[in-house]
Image (tube, rainbow, N blue to C red; front, side, top):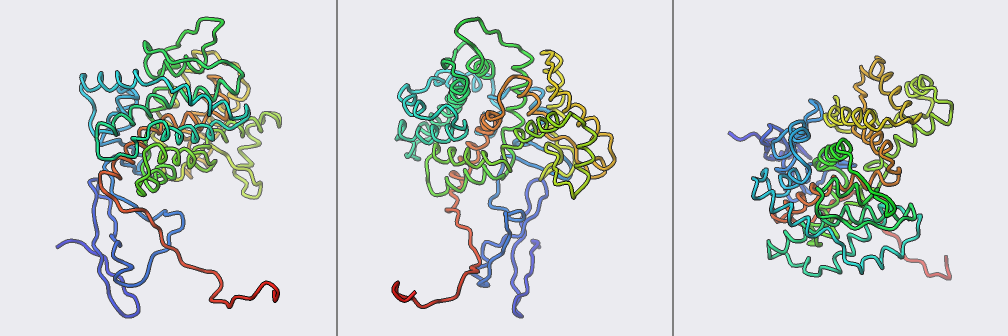
Amino acid sequence: MAESAKLLIEGKEYEFPVIEGSEKEKAIDISSLRAKTGYITIDEGFKNTGSTTSSITFLDGEEGILRYRGYSIEDLADKADFLGVAYLLIYGELPNQEQYDNFVGKITKHTMVNEDMRKIFDGFPVNAHPMGIMSSLVSAMSGFYPDSFDEKSPDTTDLHIIRLLAKFPTIATWCYKKSQGHPINYPKNNLDYCSNFLQMMFALPVEDYKIDPVVSAAINKLLILHADHEQNCSTSTVRLVGSSKANIYSSISAGISALWGPLHGGANQEVIEMLEEIKADGGNVQKYIDKAKDKSSGFRLFGFGHRVYKNFDPRAKIIKKAADDVLAKLGVNDPVLDIARGLEEAALKDDYFVSRKLYPNVDFYSGIIYRALGIPTNMFTVMFAIGRLPGWIAQWLEMRDQNQPIGRPRQIYTGPEVRDFVPLEKR
């Protein structure tokens, strides 16, 4: 007999089915709750609400498990490259050699951005936040590719997916170059995805730029680790906007805006800003460890613990090694990064943090890597977005292919009861 849940309201009993996922997760299906009972549920922040079933990403916060399409994040970060993982997320399987070569070849051919987009880009002031620029330019791509509103052709949809993956890093590097007052660099089709990004970011017309394989490998790992993370704020936003039949560019643009928030994609930026604060105050690591343990201090230690993971963030274990490799290879002499190492060491030995499982998370280590590479803090969330793009695309596709209804949360009204209108002269 199928499992079910019973609800007793006003003396009446209602029964709702229990569904079980492939990893034995269980949920009570309340799709018919309002129709049957007249009631709705209240779940602020949707922390206990499943908005969909999905076959893309499995996350177990208690056990510290993250898998894309059944593959462990550890295996993918160690053995795959970012575009192979992107293919896996979007199309459901790891590509064979022919599929991989075809996919990468298409992306390579579409890395150039329409020069008319530069006119929009040039209208932004030099101090505009890169995430605002990214959201605007991706949304503007709808105007450059009006056939994105045609959902009937799989080939057309695939082309828009390729365009997004190909042009997103190019546009991102425009933002960085503008902030530096440097001319933009065009993509080079003889370079792989991560190396091409690095040369567009850091190459200067006055000298040769050499790609450091350690740096390129670290970027590759970071992008893989950020590629998807189940139904988070930005992913849910992409699916919600897409449920209205909005095209892929406007849906992804909405996801970028959601990611921009400091409670979501801005966490690694907050890590560096915190380290700068500690440095400005003399660099006393123990002082701030003690402040973090004192609830009355008002100080929060960014980059430790996670909203979902109640154990060690599995991505942090992977990226810690990459961070160590980058710092060793580059020989960076930066007091802020020395403070980061001190915080890491102190927290991992302190029973207060260990007992509460407040381990360094992926934001802590990614911020360290970006800082070591010379990427400014206002570009950190852009780096996150480049990595998350395949996940957003995969989730948008799944939502569309499942023909999910338009998202429309309910509410409980708490405002004034009915009131008589009072003419202006009598108020």
